[in-house]
Length: 244
Image (tube, rainbow, N blue to C red; front, side):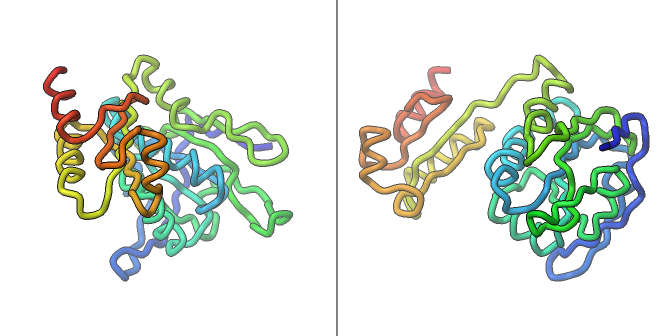
């Protein structure tokens, strides 16, 4: 039976991390004391649901969490620091701190360490999320104890609704671009000036010209979508912002 630790302090653990080719130890006090922190934990870096939805969801909503009083977002997994560092790079997860619980000490202290030997994983974390204020767990969302890898309640949207049911969702922006394109650089600069995070889809790497034309009706870049609506190139994007 997985334990709910609401109202209790997080376990006292030292995490062994690798930063700039140096070993750096980080304590739970450093991560949690005097802060409001959202934590989500998952079975493993580079695994399907963790990479496609769980981590990206929190990374994308990080600015909204900060607007609603959250100081940090932390992802904890029973993986070593080298794996977590590479996963952070692969995911471009610059808004989330990925913390390695290599020995499973924190996860065990939370009562969330489970046996996934049937998958060849050994001991791993059950999927959950929690809101921690000054080192004390205020709220936990623990996935139901059922076969497989349920992902129903520990997502970023559920946590945000708990913190503020009326929180404004960020606009969803996708940018088709090409390496070295000055017009693409201009479009990126405008999006950043207006505080919009975007997903970049690179022509020749992520998509072909044929696919670009099929989706946008154009063969040139940039092509910008905002909340599912095609805005167009850099000039069209400038006009879009000017009209707001």
